Image (cartoon, rainbow, N blue to C red; front, side):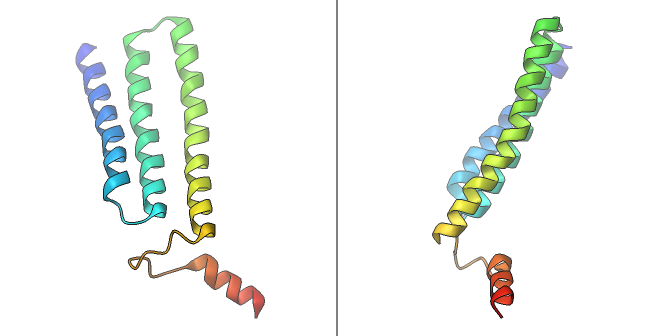
Length: 111
């Protein structure tokens, strides 16, 4: 049991650290928001599963499952909101981005 908990916690922590590294290394706000929301969500999921395995009391399981559900609902939505705000403000247009589907859709609607 201790080995499984340790492995899950280490992998979860590594994913959260990788998400933090993505904030510094990725080129634009859209990829940063995507990396952080996905890696942090999966990392925390692994950490919470490790905590549930470590402590099987009913109260702990209920609290941790509620935290997990809240986290899995809010993190992707907040990542989407940050990416949308970045795109709409015009800061999400780096030279590496070659396809701009929302702008193409907007041009088609105007025509």
